[in-house]
Amino acid sequence: MSATVAGQFFDGRQSKPVSARLNPSADGDIIVVRVPDGVMLARASADEYRLSERLGSTPRHVDFPDGGRFETLDHLAMEGVFGRRGGFVHRLESRYRYVFIALVGVVLSSVLTVTYGIPALSEWVAFQLPGNTYQELGEYSLEYLDEHLFEPSNLDATRQSAIQTRFAPTLSEFSRDGMRLKVHFRQLGQANALALPSGDIVFSDAIVKLSENDEELLAVLAHEIGHVARRHAVRRSLQAGILSVAVAMISGDASGLSEVLTSVPIILTQLGYSRDMEREADDFALRFLQTHHIPTHRFVDLMSRMDDDPDCRDKPGCTDPGWMDYVSTHPGTNERLQRFRNPR
Ligand SMILES: [Zn+2]
Image (cartoon, rainbow, N blue to C red; front, side, top):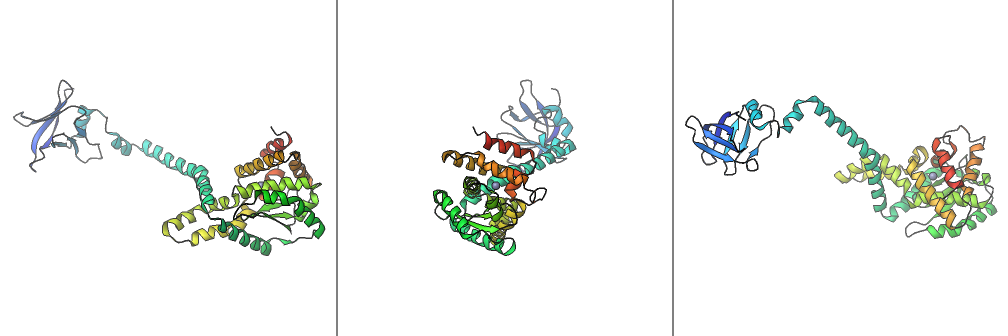
């Protein structure tokens, strides 16, 4: 390299710079000499000096270990000596290609945040909330649904109490401190079951009537308990309102959080669970049926019947959002039915 760079040298002691010239030595060091007499001002090897990035047209400098600094505006000559290494920042800002790549990066990371980050964060928050939050939330949700969506059950009391008796051991098996599982019967119009965050699980009259034996209802119960145990309703609501939660956390204003929590019943009935959540609830039901020696096909027997139910077919929202997956012709359905017909 024979290139030299003209500039100024600050020795670090006097504020006034002197005219200087920078050039590489034969053994790869960087040398700064005074102009015009050629007295050496500074010398450093590649791992001793620090080269500033090129940033637009601002002066570029080389710092030496003893406090001296060489400064220049001759960017072209600097590149002649140092090559393009160290000039990454400049290249970034001067080339739209990199700006575009950066933009794609931002969009991609946003998508990843929404796809993975928010569900993960929602899960974490859902398991941090104290038990009484769930109790209050559940009571509120049931009240809301009773007011807006549900009608009192028409099932006769004997049938109801027979099912309750059949369910009792399972409900107590999975009840926890702060989360007591309880089954309610309501008229919802269609064959349906719904789990509230508090552990209140609602069975529609229609699903009870459609069932051919109590094991089928027990299978549905296990699936719904899976949703409760994995806190799906709250996680789903948090996912939908995570921004309000973030704002609440930053501003200390809890009204955003309570808004999210009160949206649970609406989320449950309108938005439904994610496919992953349904799979988790399926896993739970499958394990339950196997450990209690109940034929796993009971679960899908009932679903297939719902599928054939003329009142239900082609009606969006006919079933609970979770059920929609089972009865729709979505490709996922067959896979899930397969799991319960031929469990490993
Ligand atoms: Zn479900």
